[in-house]
Amino acid sequence: MRPHRGQDSRFVASAGEIGAVFASYDAGMSAAGRRTARSYLYVPADRADRLAGATGRGADALILDLEDAVPVDRKEVARANIDQWLSSQQRPGCELWVRINSTTPEVDIDVAVTSEVMGVVVPKAEPALLAEVDSLITGREHLLDLEPGAVGVFALIETAAGLLSAADLARAPRVWHLGLGEADLAAELRLRPTAAREELSPLRLQLVLVSAAAGIAAPVGPTATDFRDQAALRRSTEALLRLGFRARTAIHPAQLAVINDVFSPTAEEVAKARRLVAAYDDAVRSGAGVLTDEDGRMVDVAVVRSAREVLARADPSGPDQAR
Image: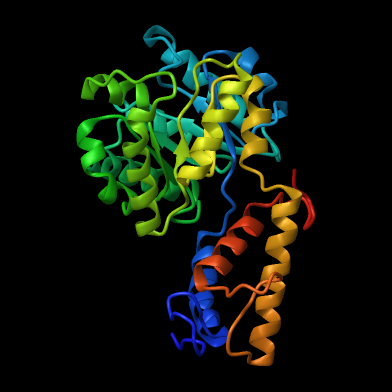
């Protein structure tokens, strides 16, 4: 990058150089082709009554659960419920995912992969299991005449082996998101987390790192098991936002409003980001040598990229929608 006279080259970039960076960055965003949901609500699939009203709860995404939320003797009931429920859905208004069992991926994917489903949540994700899931999904896509690669994978890391393979999982076929199953992982690692769960921050940051390196969406944050403590939920969700997460799972509809709010940029953040990007566009058109923000401070590539990320997270219902 060419430095402005008297300025450190780490902090100044020409408009043309920033434009080259963002041509590549925007291409990556377009390739992803989707805006990450903020909230993922688990719905036990053996409960037909819970499925019935799930799409109106306010979640950006639903995870129809065949795994932990369903007793072993009700797995078949859950599969039948999903099959029936999915066939009745027309424009549900949110993403639909299905969490399968790591021990029965074939029978679960037979009901989980349909044209209505965005993807499959794979618990206890490890490379061999993801390879098997990819093969099974490919077969279903072919059988249903779906576009190859249309069905994504949300890889939930819950084992030490999975965590050590996190970079490989992030680069695996179909993987759009990573997440941590912290209860299972903490048990395997013999951790004793406090209520604030600071002990898990290094593991969470590892997922942020490998996701960014692989060019996939930011990871999805873990569930807060106490859905009644809204203040604690807000604090922990804000901590996840600062750490690089952009979404979180929920076990109860009461958690959704806080999660959606925290992961939505404020009106002030959106307005500031829009002004910065507009200034950048003006600088590119005019061929200006350097960029400065509205306060006269020099702007580097990272600042403009962060502004674009804020705009990408703004409510898709309109350009000025924010909290």
